[in-house]
Length: 125
Image 1 (cartoon, rainbow, N blue to C red):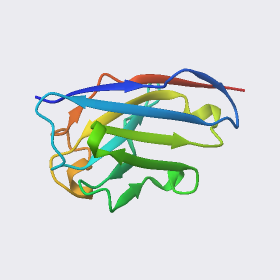
Image 2: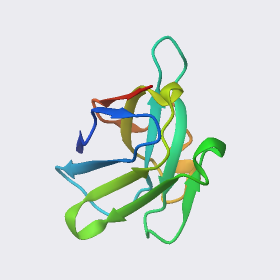
Image 3: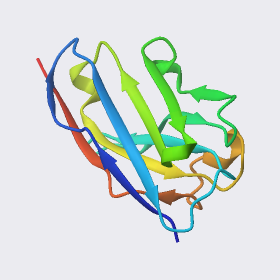
Image 4: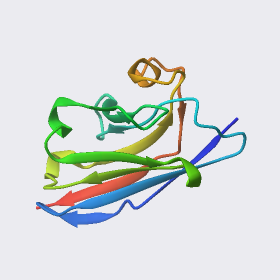
């Protein structure tokens, strides 16, 4: 199974930017969509962003459309999430995910995806 390792989490101030990265190791390929989910403490996990296997299509949760950017470098088996104007209520554990299909339906969050261990991001006011 592909192993996913997230990097870049930490403590930032409200309004700051943060870039997360996730590197896949193992039997990797460019066959599946990649994405990010997040889970605030005590709340349900939610979809943040996804990118298709080809990298041509990107998908965002409503809250992320204007402030977050997802990208992938297939040569490095790495997906990135750049977040701007962060808010305190976005404090959460952010999880990288390898999907089960090439497009948006591959990162639908139905539990079949391969999730990383997560990285904690804290936005302080």
